[in-house]
Structure formats: structure tokens, C-alpha cells
Image (cartoon, rainbow, N blue to C red; front, side, top):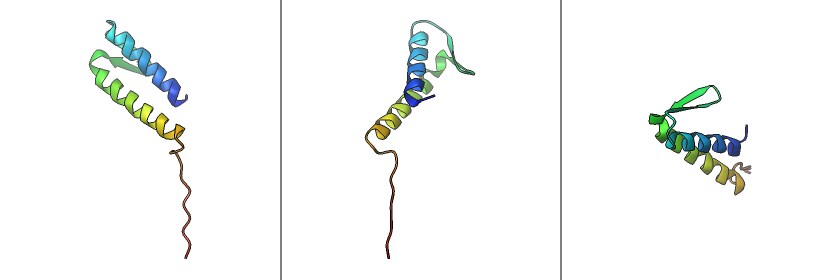
Length: 66
């Protein structure tokens, strides 16, 4: 599953919980209303990772010469 797909799933879970659902299932994990802060934090982390990867900040090659 890609990072963007994960963000989409998290957004869906947040929307459902904010609209009255007491819990929501993502894969094999059940998220309860009290876990919204966790969902927000995970979404923020994934979005930062996506932004870093899209700005070519994901990998670096370094060479040292003597």
C-alpha cells in the first residue's frame, strides 16, 4: 500500500469518526473515537514523508575521497 493510499484510509477513518462513528476499522486495526489524536499524528507524519519523497529528499548518495 502506498503512502498516499494510507493517507486516504486515515482521512476516511477521521471523517467517519468525526461524523459520529464510535470506531472505525483500518485493515486489522480498530480505531476508536479517543484515538483521533493518533490518527491526526499519523496523517501528519505520512504527509511529511510524502512531501520529502516528492521533493527528491528521500535518498542521498555520498562519496568520500582521500
